[in-house]
Image 1 (cartoon, rainbow, N blue to C red):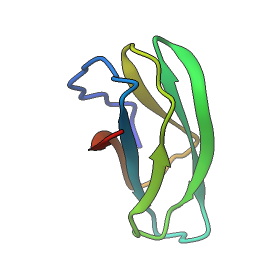
Image 2: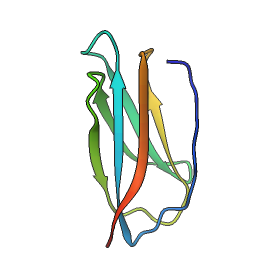
Image 3: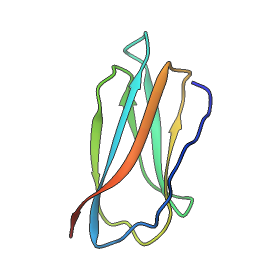
Amino acid sequence: MPRIELAVRRDADKRKTYAMEAACADGDRTKTLGYAVKVDRQPFLRGQITCDGEVEEVRISGFLRGEVVVDLEGGPVETAYAIVTPRSEG
């Protein structure tokens, strides 16, 4: 997976609950990718996703106001994505 970044950035709102949806696909379905959710470039949450093509969702709360970015770490893999979206008013 070459390093490609396409991002629409907005500030987080501490009154909202968010979810990170991520998926990874590879011919070797046992591979994993790490992810790092960062707020204003500071680590906030880390974990791993399995490269089996299934979408995984992680609920996130407690963001302070700031720019949210997800870095995918590891590879190479055939394809992967991650997105953080607001889910509800909190």
